[in-house]
Length: 172
Image 1 (cartoon, rainbow, N blue to C red):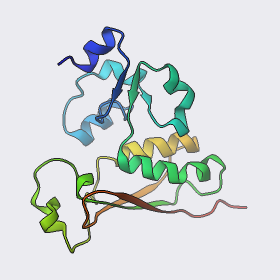
Image 2 (image 1 turned 90 degrees about the horizontal axis):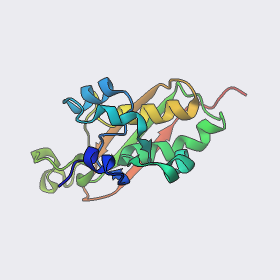
Image 3 (image 1 turned 180 degrees about the vertical axis):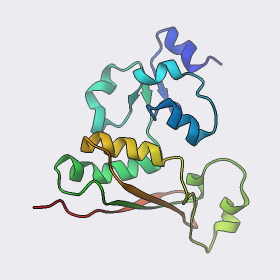
Image 4 (image 1 turned 90 degrees about the vertical axis):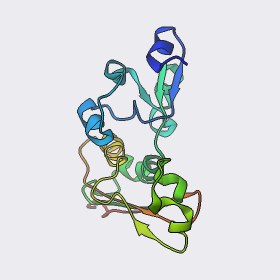
């Protein structure tokens, strides 16, 4: 199997379903994913694949970074409010929930359906790996840094995602 870099060098259009090209700052990516980036020279050319934000850029992009699940739910919910200046970008709370499949593929007792069944718990509270992706999106939309509290929760179901979003209304 060829790597993304080899495919790109060959002129192939690539839609990356992993998180490798979502976060533009390489140091931030490395911190949150716990490894060195395998292809840092390609990050700048990647277009974030959310049509509501980057429709025209996606059309001509050779490398598209497919958005994460939580970032999609939070970004789409806040996009029209931030674009129209209706909320204070320093007051955002994203209270999110997902089924067991949203907690990743790694073997973890806490995310087994038999453990998560009949339960409801927050996870990744000190810092979930989707936090910098969401913060990057919201800051891009708002045109300035935003203050975000992001708390993901695990629900006793296999699939699904929900985001309840809060923010103070903008002055005026």
